[in-house]
Length: 212
Image (cartoon, rainbow, N blue to C red; front, side, top):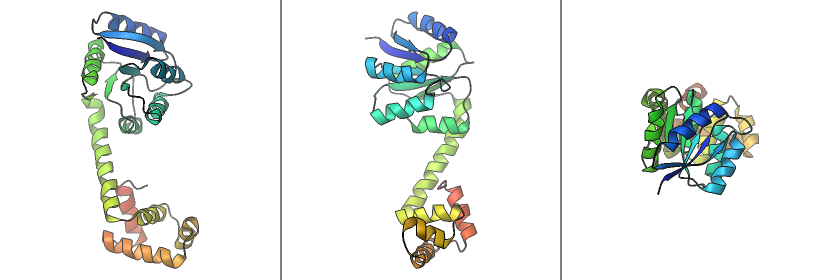
């Protein structure tokens, strides 16, 4: 059985090039092509392809919007992102949303074919030069959040976030529908657990652990 693929990009010439490239591969079959994000989501729903090759920047619904929709609907198609450029936040979002492969458009066409095969086989293919630093930051960020969640209760995390956002005790109390005295009690517990002794230190901790 060939690997079924939907390709989505707003540049017809690139779609033509990819379709021609995949047509030369005996184990890859393009089931349809899409020019925008809405079409891509509809195509995945309808055809249930093995792989969606997706550009991040497209009209009507961008690539991240497509990924969010697919995750929300729990569509099983694996996604390979093919893009000219990706900033760190976009890349972090794409990884969180389950992207299994990433190839830059400037790289050799044969790499997209290799990527599709690897991703179909259940492997990850993330172009190392582009993602290594971002992936490292993302992993550190997730580790920081996990550390904070293990140390603090859900309510304490909420209060730490609001302190880092610059809210005073009375403002925090009103937003959480608790008394100002309760906020002070929670802050005392937070300070003890984290080994900090001021709002400034707590704010710094919250930023370092990506709570805000």
